[in-house]
Amino acid sequence: MLDTLIKNALVLPMTGAGAEPDCSIGIRDGRIAYLGKDKPEAREVIDAGGHIVMPGLVNAHAHTAMCLMRGYADDYTLESWLFDKIFPVEARLDERAIVAGTVLGMAEMIRTGTTSFSDMYFCEPAVAEAVLKAGMKANLSNAIIAIGDGYDPEKDRAVIETRTLLKDYGVSGDVRGDISIHAEYTSPVHIWHMAHEWAAEYGAITHIHLSETKKEHEEAKARHGMTAAAAFAKNGVLDTKVLFAHGVWLEKEDLELLAEHGASVAHCPVSNLKLGSGIANVRAMLDAGINVCLGTDGACSNNSLDLFEEIKLAALLAKGSSFDPTALPAYEALKLATVNGAKAQGRGDETGTVEPGKAADLIMIDTSKPNLRPIYDPAGAVAYSARGSDVEMTMVNGKVLYRNGEWLTIDVERAVREVEEYAVPIVLNK
Ligand SMILES: [Zn+2]
Image 1 (cartoon, rainbow, N blue to C red):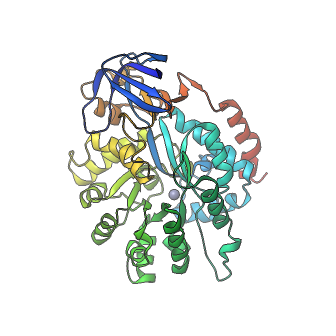
Image 2 (cartoon, rainbow, N blue to C red):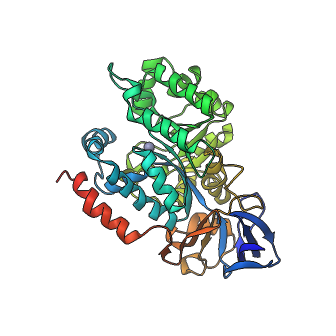
Image 3 (cartoon, protein in one colour):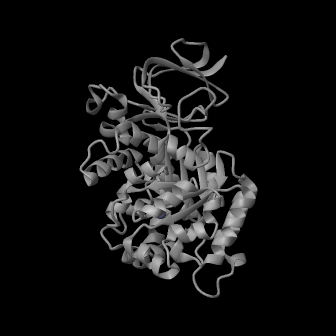
């Protein structure tokens, strides 16, 4: 017998097949065991009431704990934002504050339909425990920043935490370790070699910020005599699986290089606009054969973790910047947030579509809301009309994490209190 049957659903499977009304999804042991028109027996039945059921969304570039600084540093230039506002706060944050920010961020992600995220921040072994408790999936990394002559990897918390993550969680579970080189401009080449050897040894993904701003992109060229992407490729970093964030200023040759090496790029349109970094050419990346996915970046440069905003904005920017309304159609925009995100996390066989054998990582969208009526094309409705607040149920591995206003794995009131009473005074240095 099935554990759960979701019946009467308008299923948007994201497999290339169209949306199917009056459909049932059967779940056994956390996986999709049935998809079709029948209603096989199950211990628990969820009536979808004709609402859209689709794969959970993947946030492929996040600094989740930065929810602590949501609205703390709006409208600064990137440099002043980072050096005057963010770095001093981050130097004060302790593990308890970081876990508090992460839990708040996960509550928002679960509420708005994200089931898996790629996180880059500090205290990741403690974050891993919080992710397991919340029931989400996550690729976790602490970015290596190796500035100055005195840098010793053996004393770097990022290196120590990465070792712990890889030892305790490996690279294949619901929670898994990634390796992270923060960016081209924050570490010398021999550190990239160290990270790459590690990635090869463990089969881990390397998560890197790439060509986010024009200044950074041009400085990399002056430093290496080639673009950051080319420098990473030349030094072997792209020979293992890489997830780059941003890629706003990538050049034509960079796109070919990334595609050739099977790299992924997490497009972060809201963050790129808010920090005035520019507009990544998603159409060109996709045409080159790059696996493009979506990320929110941190809530201090967004200020939301609602991936529905990224989906819509990614499509609109691609259209508006090319004067071509066909540049990124709704279905393709949704693929960035589902299929492609799962692939970028190394979870392509496990999640990102609704089909038998895959994990039951599903979301239900309340299509009875006025802003979603009528529906001619379900993919268009999700990409252009839906908001994160229209998600009425979020499920990971067949377990409901959120339904109809209720979080089942996170005490949200407590999470908000912990952030405001414990962490905010640290942010404000009070
Ligand atoms: Zn980032």
